[in-house]
Every structure is written in structure tokens, then in C-alpha cells.
Amino acid sequence: MALDSRPRLVLWDIDHTLLESRGIGHDVYERVFPAVTGEPLRELSLVQGSTELDIIHNTLRLHRLDCTQGSVTRLAAALADGYREAVDELTTRGRVLPGAWRALADLAADPGTWQSVLTGNTTEVARIKVEAFGLDRYLDLSIGAYGDDHRDRAELVGIARARAGRQLGSEVPADRVVLIGDTPNDVAAALVAGARIVGVATGKYSADALRAAGAPVVVASLTDLPALRGVLG
Image (cartoon, rainbow, N blue to C red; front, top):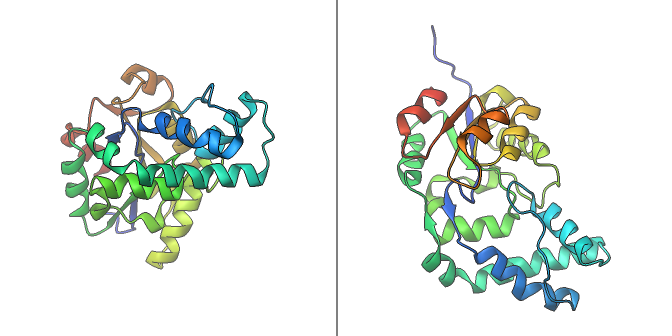
């Protein structure tokens, strides 16, 4: 059987899939939220698997604050500034997860594979995180999709496909897109969009939870490169 020569797009989740920031995100919110809203951060909306637009909207509502386009934009910009100021903390407290370097390098050796991210982080925060740890050498961030592109994570798959298609000059079919992530929301986004999904049980959700969400393949960590390779072909 002839090998499929169509381009393949591998989209990585960032937090708890490629790296851990170990509480930096919450700390940044605590620092910038009062400056933007005039209120202390009393509660942060659910983060795991959510887009930043969702987190911002829901957190503002938890504080009974008006959720306007202006307030959302100001808070997103303040978060980016907060991460820039916290880069040293991020690299000291955080870490690249086991197997991530090798997996990224291995896929980068495939001439028909392009790698980027599909993440709940905003475009700028995602860039700051992956550049802080040097992961950007393997990722084309211009063809990724981000938490400030759309509130619905499943919509991000189409956004990434469109960006990749424009850059590559060739459509990337949904069945040639592979998401790699650690939450049921990553799984749902892939399934709704017709993409493939590999669950990685390195976050807050167990392998059983990811399978229950519909992931046909789940690896314990990215150190299981043979299993990851088996899915990708």
C-alpha cells in the first residue's frame, strides 16, 4: 500500500502535555487581576482543558464583574505582560515533561509532518512558554491555534488547519490532523472536528478518564515513543 503523501499536522497541547508551569499561571492571575479589575482574585475558573477566553469570561463572572470585550482584552494583555515578567520563575519552577524533547525531535525528522500547538493559552502566552524552554525550535507557531482565537476548543482545529493550508499551499484534511493532549476537552475537540487524538495521562486526568472521553489511544507519558509512533504511522 502506498504511503499517504498528504501533509500531516500534529498539534500539541502545551500545559501538562509538553511542560508543567507548576502554579505560575495562578500566580500571574493573582498579580494582574487586581490591576485590571480593581478587585483581588478570589476564585479562578476551571483551567484544565479550557480556552483562555473561557477562563477570563468565567472568572469575571465569578467576581460579578462586567464581561465586556474591553475587559477581556485588557486582562488577556495583562496576562501576557505578567508571563513576560515571570519568565525566570517559569523556567526555575517549571519543567519540560519527560519524553517531550525526544518526541518533538523524532516527528521533526518526518518531511511530511508539521508540528504546532493547539492550546487554551493565548497566542502570546503560548509563545512565551514554549520559547522559555526552547521548544519553539520544533514548532511552527504561525500555524497553531490558541485560546484567544475562539472560546470553543473544537473550533481551534479548523483554525489551525486553515492556517497550515495557507502556509503549505495545500489543504490539510481533518483526518491528517493529530491532537496530542491531556484532558477530556482535548479529546472532545479532536472528535468533534474529525481529527485524530492521542491522550497523554500526564495531567490531572487518568488514562481511564481519557479513554472514557473517547480517546482510542492513551499513553502514560511521552516517553512511550513507540506507542506514539504506532498511532502516527
